[in-house]
Length: 89
Image (tube, rainbow, N blue to C red; front, side, top):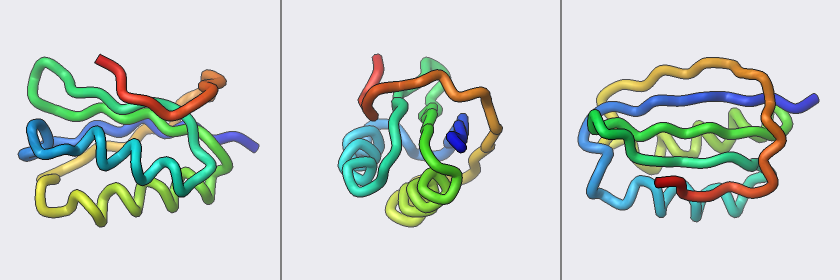
């Protein structure tokens, strides 16, 4: 069963390579979706895949970027059928 998680990260998450690091991490997991900066200084991430794989991926992102993340919210969403994981503008 495909899961979809929508995450917003706050802190010093822009200008630190967050999006590029996230895309690199995504290559090691069977996930699709996107990551992007928002106008209010957040990073938004949507990841789809098997629930366990999405959870492992999000744990890896939080661990790798822990020094920059002050808080985050995670919401379950309906899968959208992304074909790859990419940076959006």
